[in-house]
Length: 250
Image 1 (cartoon, rainbow, N blue to C red):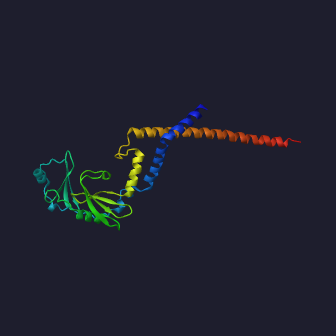
Image 2: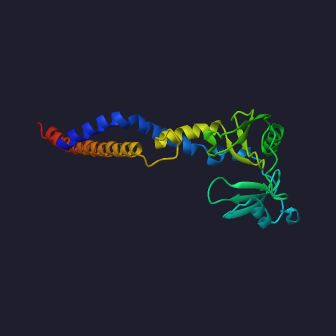
Image 3: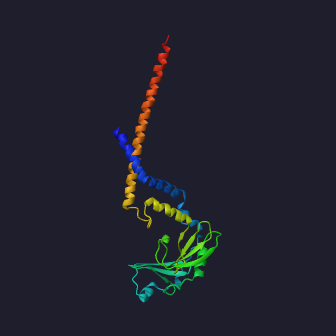
């Protein structure tokens, strides 16, 4: 009886504290597993661009560029972009430096019309691209820093493309589906600020209390099943005795 009373009290009062969070965990888990991650990432809205071969005859020597600009990169990547070939130089500290491969200089500023056109070129769907808006500081939902161009599309998912002001590449995509997913993800890990920290004390405490609720529920279920089994056996054993009593009557 002590075990029953203790399990009942633990299950009841702790469930009052964390019951809503358990509901969020289960409901959020359903949302996050029901929606394909490719849809969350907006991959179905991106048109696959054909690969472009690098034209090394139109590339300025890297050592010349580095010496001219007095840079000490730890890594250099040559790649094709919508605005032409580019050197991406990773420095020991700070953001990468992106230079036009032909001249070794920064790309000319990307204008709004060009940003909108490049985004529309890579968009898959029938929706029209809205006006491009330059963000001097990338919004938190992009997970990036620095300036970006934002182009919104008039589809039911409210798709947004974020375009690099240097290369014209679509560096990330966001939509209403992503925002729904992100909302439940933040509820899931209880990090409402950045949505990245899942080792903080609040989540650990809530998880521990939820485990107590589950374990106490298992104990209560076991006690109830054991009691029902005893009653079932008692009823089954009583039936033959009643039947023999009726047969012995005159």
